[in-house]
Figure 1 (cartoon, rainbow, N blue to C red):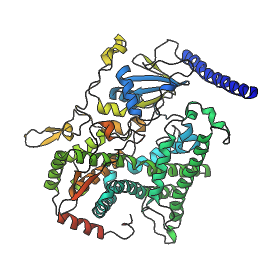
Figure 2: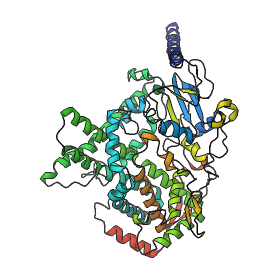
Figure 3: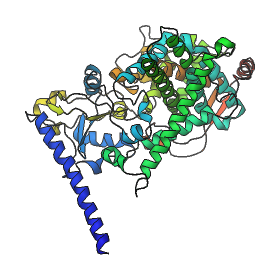
Figure 4: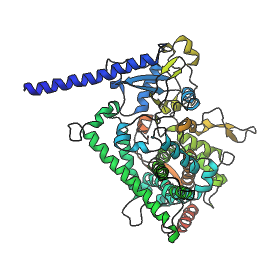
Length: 565
């Protein structure tokens, strides 16, 4: 008994010494780097040694960040076990720091659980600034960036997948949410790897793999003690309490095996094309062909380039469908809750497209269907897929509006608040008098919890039509990130969302089904790492027999492999 008590007491003392060393080190370093003694932005009171560790949320980040915003204003500063955090609650501040000073706020945080143990840190969106990240961005930007590139290279694929989507809903309307998930997944799989949905022998279903990896990703980013105390990653896997390490290493092997398999499958088949093997166009195939067509680099350079292509394609495969699925779920829920908006949107589709042909991307444009364009923006705004964004990290100390922001601060952008700001006046009493002129946040979206596409529209000069309201903030300016870390697939995602929305509204009337409480944002949305709607049900009723005939005809024209679901 005495020995056990000694071990326990020694463990407690050891833990306190470790915590204390982090605490002392943090404040000594901060004092040396901030000789003028500038204050940090306001935030919750810090406890001795652990700082704000007990304040850090493990779920529903946007709701916690918004609660802080109402008390502390446009910036909330915390320190957890020596690690500084900054939550930005203002679009103007986010633009100033993450965009205008983007060269400083270009890095990503060290994610021990997600990155070093589980291997997700190789993903483009998570990779720290450096050679690998720059190469990944260059490859992805070339393939995905710009509306003309997206229209030219991916419109046919999107139309095909939207056709399969509405056909699948016709056959199995009760599975509409699953069909939306599959469409979003199939598009990125075909763009990335040229695959249909599984490999040739059927032993690897790419959609199922994608879903499983998404579940793992959500687990790894929820916050582990090892992320606050990185030294914990060195404890043995057999040690009591080391389940996190066993999980992380197991997930890392799964990520690596999947990433290697998908890349090598395309690479090996591409190298066999000269022997008559046919391979569909894809990001991996096209980028590798471009790489191999140039004078061969040295072996190390070639290895780095192939690794960058492998990681960037896998990043697209893993995360490229999340935003689209989230927005389409929000759209379907909104249509079931706001039938008058659905009726107005369909009236515009009927006027422009009619019922004698399927929609095409040539129907897209504010000059052709402005209400649909506004509806797409509202679907993006209503429930931002990443409510707190992916964090940035400054590589140098910074001073902003008289506040000191240390380098390596983990900076979150509260996308949810920018999206839902109505009553905020930045709690002026908490700001220093000399900063109060900067304490105003624009009222971007009146009645933010309501689904109102009209907020993006104005009556045109003739009074008989509508035009875009340029004074209303475009949600794509913040939902897809800031500065040099902005999502390279933004144009592709927006067009895919547009195609799916138009096809669904053209083919079906969405009607609310069942009860349930859907009055508040908390009733509707999950506020998880990728925020979705909570499970809901609705009826998708075919509008016209002619539309059904056109869908059946278009689906029948697809080859058998293309129709694989």
